[in-house]
Amino acid sequence: MLFNSFLFVAFFAVVYGLYVVLRHRAQNVLLLVASYVFYGWWDWRFLSLILVSTAVDYLAGRGIARTSRSRTRRLLLSASVATNLGILFAFKYFGFFAESFGRLLGLFGLALDHATVSVVLPVGISFYTFQTMSYTIDVYRGRLAPTRDVLSFALFVAFFPQLVAGPIERARRLLPQIEAERELRGPRVAEGLWLVLLGYAKKLVIADNMIPFTEPVFGDPESASGLAIVVAVWAFAFQIYGDFSGYSDIARGLGKLMGFDIVLNFRFPYFATNPRDFWRRWHISLSTWLRDYLYIPLGGNRHGRRRTELNLMLTMLLGGLWHGAAWHFVAWGLFHGLLLVVHRRLRPALERPGAARPVRGPRHALLVLGFFQLTSVGWLLFAVERLSDVPVLLGNLSWAWSAEATVGLLTIALFALPLLAAEWLAERSGETLVAVGWSRPARFACYALTWLLVVASGWVESHEFIYVRF
Image (cartoon, rainbow, N blue to C red; front, top):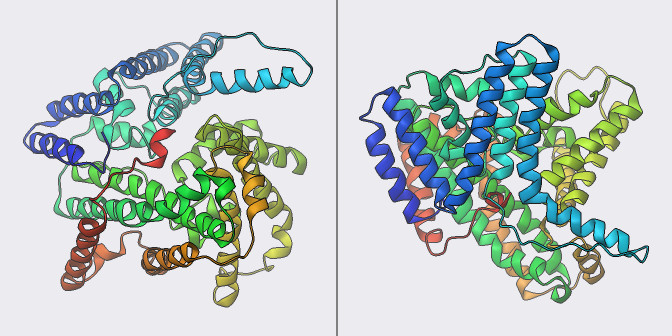
């Protein structure tokens, strides 16, 4: 059940109509049932995986809190982590590692005799696995008291607006909202409606209009050449941003309509001036998860420069692998890890000593444009279907002009530049939802124009959200 389908619109209308007339406990029951229906619509059999993760982490959290024995606490935490990562590995990574190991043995003239099993990847498994696993870790660290309410915990794991493509919520933020009564106030509802509309516009108007220029190139790299490849990379930058941030906006908007405050996942990432800045703006819920549960436990920056750089590379490598069981995702993670390492070494020379304010003006604009190009190089690694496609595309790259490239550049300008202009205004104002604070006539005109664009451009064909695959 995709957000960008009439089926989901009808589904949410029914759920919301019941939600607003029910009391708190009944609301939570309704949301849990709706969440299981929403997820089971893809394949009801995979509900068993969510139920297993829910039961194991709920019991592990309760057990950790009841005992003071360090050994028992570690065993319970290990059971939780092993269960979650075991399910994730079995469904997402087993085939990848088995195939890669077989190829490695082939280099030495050996063969791995194993049955190849085609496993369907459960949607959103990477998202809800990280979400529920962080609960047990926080309980173990003493940063969170375990909930006694099975219903609340089950809803925390399966809350449908952000279940299959995030943001990745923390129990410290979401569980108290589930356990407390929620108010459906006018300003919150208005923000929710705007976020939903904005999310649909990003996905249906911007991201989906980039597909005609990305699919032919990345789907058939041997036939692609010239400036069409460059245009495809730029188009993919806005496709994935519109697609993923659009999903996050819709999820946050649906949450606000029901009285929830879901974490902000994007903060104008294409205005970043360096890799550190980028990861404070892009997929914030994942980058902070990797920081808190991987980078810092590895030692962070506490053990010298070389260890810090190794920790950065390992964190980004695993961050790339989180996106999918493929070497091009690993390469994408290592690419961003390398950017972080290089920036960390160059930062003392790049930053002006004693500068009290961030750089603005032409120098800032050049930094933004320059880092956008570096980010786009990374998107080339991300967008291909196989890592071997990268040298093919680079080998076919030339500055030969084509009609398709011209149309692509005009399309990017038509759809991406207005988005960037709106985000520039929001960036300057410091408000992520700047349109909500405009005067009534200006706000009405903005909403009406956005709605017309969605209706005119978006409802023709539904394309799956990219991050649902992860």
